[in-house]
Image (tube, rainbow over all chains, first blue to last red; front, side):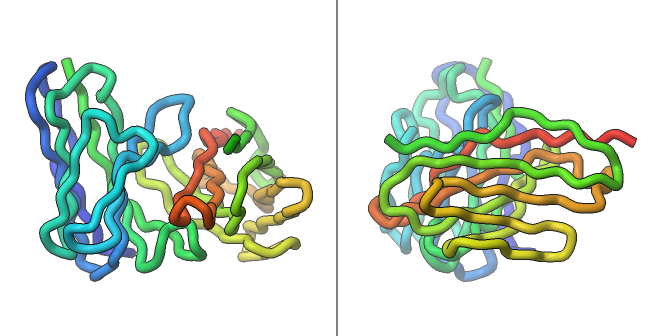
Length: 115
Length: 111
């Protein structure tokens, strides 16, 4: 199994507070992704990274920012959490772009509840 | 536009065969992935098809028809542990190879 760890696994926070989720990999993969998963929706891409300090927006990036200061860590920050950001967040890694014959390996997810 | 459709839920009997369909509309098609996701867990990779035809991997097979924008995942000799959601995802060359995901098909296996 790909070495990928997300922390925390569960978090409850209040509206308006900042929240940071961490994704750590030991596979030295270049590509890292943050997705959210909500009932009735497919996985939706928030942001992704194609190298250290190289990031780009996904389809649902509003209200989120990311940073990748080293290969192994990809941080997702909710600037000011809202109830609409209650979701399960998955980090994924790949050694090529995820849609180019390169399966994604997912972390175990973070369940975030914003009250 | 870009779109992927899968049935929301299917039910099958242990030991039987089930086919889960996925239809898609997209530009810059670069292959179709199937993932399995057990409740409360992460998705795990099952298969990848980029050319037309059937790919077999043990009890699981995946089929692709690019001209029809259609794929299916075939599960044989169903076991209770196959109860999970099955996610279809399409890669696109014209969006930095980003994946478009279907909402998933929840498969319920009954004894």
